[in-house]
Amino acid sequence: MNTYKEKIKITVVAPPFSGHLYPILELVLPLLKKIDKYDICVYTGFKKKEIVERLGFPVKILLEDRPDVFENISDTDKKTNPIIAYKQFKENLGLMPKIIKEMEDYFSEEKPDIIVADFIAVPVCFVSKKLNIPWITSIPTPFAIENKTTTPAYVGGLYPRDSFIFKLRDKFARGFIRTFKKLLCFILRKELKELDFTLYNEKGEENIYSPYSILALGMKELEFRDDFPSQFSWAGPCCSSLFKDSAKFEVETKFEKIILLTKGTHLKWAKNSIIDIARELSQKYPNYLFVVSLGSYLEREKEIIKENNLQVYHYLDYDEILPKVDYVIHHGGAGILYSCIKHNKPAVIIPHDYDQFDYGVRADLAEIAYVANLKSRKSILKAFDKMLERKEWKNLEKLSKAFNNYSPSDLLEKEIDRILKGVKK
Image (cartoon, rainbow, N blue to C red; front, side):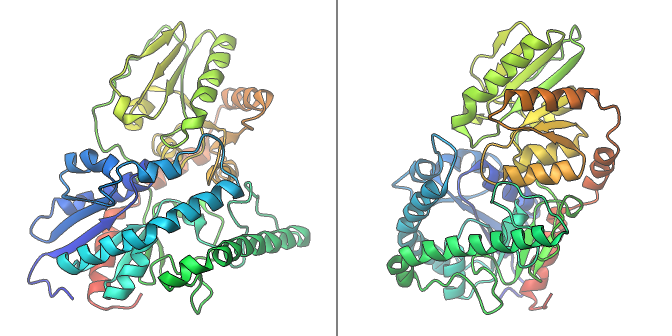
């Protein structure tokens, strides 16, 4: 355990996906500047090596001999479903032994004092326990943690209700989620047995999250759940832009309103649909400018497509573009949702996949956005019209102010200090 006579060695572990890696990098970036106190290394996939190094972090590459392996598993050509989820789980499980071995060798040699890991970096829970290294889980999607008593997530976007029927619905849905996970573990029991993995601990809570500290990279004000584990804390959103080198958007004053459309970085299969939606809206509203960002940072320098009142960029920096627009149409990812709150921008949310339906529910309940159905153009047009007609967004303004009350990196430092001193929460 570190005695503070030397630097505190921190290893940061995250998969090479923007929605997981970028928030944790923002979380630890202020600590990187404290060179006399911290020695930090980031452990991720090959595809994000250049980006991490540009921020000044030393990088260790996972599965360096297979540079595309993580993206090949995660990038689907259509919306996920239980069959795809099973396939991804099995493929990830197949990588586990090698990843765990690499981590064990690296951690045994480097001897970090503490690990900060994204919540889907599951191998960390095995290695940290074996080597007795404390660890902190960072989670940009707090409601991914299983519920005990409240309305669960990942079942299509359920709204919380107080009546007996809906309480029964929630209980059934929670049971369905647990049963699905247990079924996966049963089917793959041979592989899991070799890892000595159990799904739940003695408290009935998931073992993949740190028993020391879970930092939720979101806002408590947006969440209706209150049944999180005792080691859980609200750290605040991490959605700031890490770089300022995207294409610069120049405001065109001839248009009455400017609307940004984005589908984030992960939904490659949704690229054409977001352009189609923008094109249809641009034809219906010729006095408005519709600006599409396709979310591909590595293609940021590619040519901008301009068609009358429609512009398509391969990548736009949210902090750069949002102050210049009036409204946003997005998929409901954590990054853009909190960026809209940060910049006080009303939105239409069109959930596509994953946790986006649940973020849509929370945004709707908080009255900061209207939610539309991806499969229904009528629904999208109706939500867009309602957004335009609305004159006041009082709760959005309130949440935008509350956004600035959070200091994620300060809480991370406090948690590191508490854990290394052996103080219970």
